[in-house]
Length: 474
Ligand code: 9PG
Image (cartoon, rainbow, N blue to C red; front, side):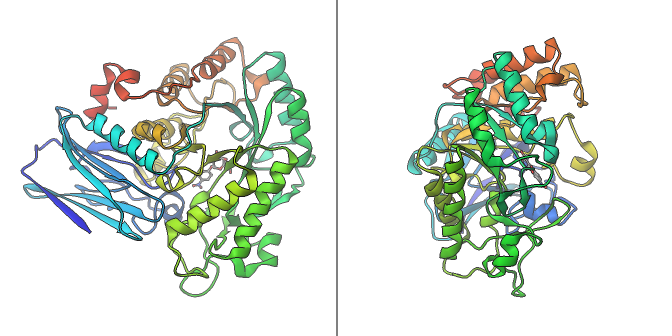
């Protein structure tokens, strides 16, 4: 552990924290505020690092990889790990009487970190983040425009619905690059290669039809997970990450029940993962949304206890990359952020968008700002603006429809503006037949903002609003 003490700092310091994985909240808050801890225990695994949860104490802020303390004049202090391949770097800033104590604790082998006092925190955050990206050979390809089935059809998606949307997109001349099938096509969590009963077809039959319409086929997988009812689990119960009691460890609660994660320190699991992405690549999917990736980085009992969490995670992601191919486009989601640099092309940098602005009861009363809402998605991905040097950021989808949505017109336009500010991947998930002329204009605008020169600095993209951001009024 390394420690720094700031004696008598200004009273109105703000703290910028990055969160652990895609869905963990990242924010800029007065140091004296109290960070929230989700009341539901299963959210600790799904939205946070269970080994380093938010403190829940006023004035005590925890962050992964990067932390900054910002004075009202824009100066302050920045701490940043300069490598994340083997180590999760835990930062804590603690207001204590007249001082602030900052500690940095590596989980894993020692790691080089930078700690700087600076007149320009925003600029220093960007420079250190770029340095980390360079050292880890970040992949930052040109942005893509993606239609994704999730926020249109959720698990009720069918093969025909995706093809119908692709046909309509072609007819309307909507400039999508990728049509991506999300959750809902497979037999069970882990049984990716077998069709689900409601999908009305087989995922391997979709790519040809999308290609004929001029789109690149994309597919969603949660490759590290297995449901207790899956064939994967029945055939290989010994492949699961275990708890201290020796039993498969439940690693979250979704899809109507708990689920397990693969132990990626087993060579046969890495072979299985390599084979999975090679198979779907062979079906014709060069674009993969790899979701719930936190499953390979959880604390637990592994076959090889000598492999740390960050390394177990990177080995697993490397196997997926090897199977998919060097030229595949991999979007990480629900993923430890810095540990993914160099292995993914794009990364979800916030919680899910939903067709509503804010789920205030869940956020404030249950202490969980990782739930789906437009507010949570843009609040967190904006607070991670500097991560464009790590991968292409994906702030999640635009929702332009009026039907099947609680977003007001103003909220739809605000969502568009904030997604544009983050830049990176441009995604949409409306059933296209639902869009009225105004919705289509909004959708086109959200695709137009896709640009290869992502915003370099907040000042460029926010203009005068940058002061509001650094002052914490956003
Ligand atoms: C498919 C979805 C979509 C979406 C992903 C992810 O913490 N949670 O319980 C939780 C559940 C689902 C979720 C995010 C968090 O959504 O982000 O785009 O692909 O899976 O199931």
